[in-house]
Image 1: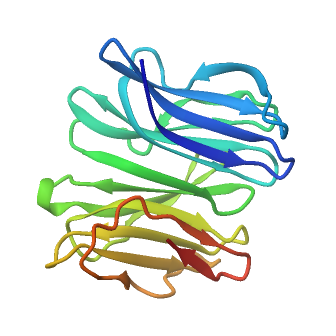
Image 2: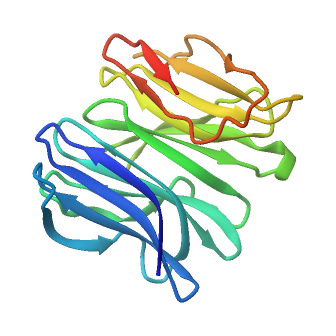
Image 3: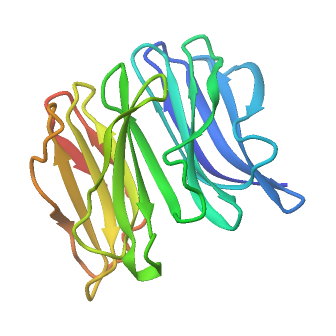
Length: 231
């Protein structure tokens, strides 16, 4: 058995949740476990993705102030990668079934998703989509309510192709930022895009880092004032 892609979600109560990919017998599944603030497991661990779906990759997790959770990941289905999400209530129970960001399966290649709560009642989910081929990767984002209903249409965030390896963060008061890596130019560069509480673009695509490096596994955090740090 092989374990990888560990992610953590902290709650205001001090409790936390771990999600990770577990590979066994050529299958990979997304596992989920609650912990108390004393790091003691609460309840049994559970599989997030449905048994009929395997090859799970690239998990992401977000929590809100009410103790609700959303977990996202990529599953290969019918030969195509597709982004799924699962909601959890404040009582640690699944809300509904595995959901997708689109009902179309065969035409999309979605992967490397990231999620953040935009408010207590909405979350923003971003992902990479290379629908037109390997060299046309772009970053897209979609807002959802905490019952899994789509809010507005999805939007293309990136201006430049060959963009992926992204992360999204929110101030908790509705502002949010999406950060990703673009490989279109001589060197890979880290780009960002900020949005206001009214869901309007603030900055346009802006450059964060462009040195001769391999900007992988970036992270970003935004405070309630809308200021943010990228590392």
